[in-house]
Length: 369
Image 1 (cartoon, one colour):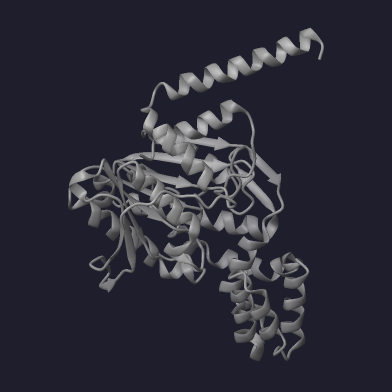
Image 2: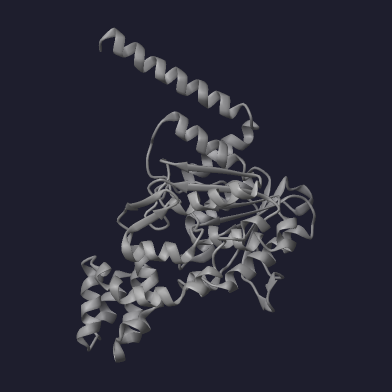
């Protein structure tokens, strides 16, 4: 290697290392070690997690119904803080491996972590019911005193911001964190149909991940005029979302109509975007309902700190949603921290960029503890 190039590379590494050291100096080392572990656990291929105390919770209620939940870590009196950790749209709910690992890692550094089951999100539906469960979960932890945090992933990030905008709940929180969350649900769903990510400074073309589109289609099958095959197509898509391809194929063999068979063919060949024109009219008619499931326009009501993290490569909820949230918070003058990072995809670690990028994400994740 030529001496000049070697010096340049060495210089860049020293600058990056100095930046890492400067960032880490502002937070307790224990939190940064834990946040590095959290990032490792966001990698789908990593199965390690510490062993901590955990138990099922039997006395959490929301809107008159008992909520299935688990609690990790020390008792209230011994915890450094308490955290509600909300799962995203996933059929395993609070049993999803990475969520469990995340909860255990937080608990291993002295946090008391509550993971409430959100039945509608397990069933691939975004609803006010989930917001109510998040609010009740915060109140449950807050009754013991001490600091309480609320962390939501993906669409639950947006719902967590919405829950924190309730004045009573917001006053019980030290912070609310949205990781890959939405600001405007209608705009996010429009992206899934159009592959156009609209931000405050313009629009960019981005291929939406089929998973998000599939969730949207699953909830709106009645608009596709499937007749007798509607229930079968619903079962096929649900099996596909649950990653049970054999079950999806077996159920698809029972399809009787051309429309039903066409949808299965589009699903199997990753061409579901052909259905987008059929769903755009429905989306236009749902503006009011979807706005009620969005934190847009309500961030000024959040009295706690707001933490926003988004991956540059997110192709389910584009990072433009966090840019919109940042713009709204800047106008209100509220305290918030934000990070849009190349290290993340859709709330999962997907690459190994610069040391500085990693340091910034470690610093942000340390704020959760």
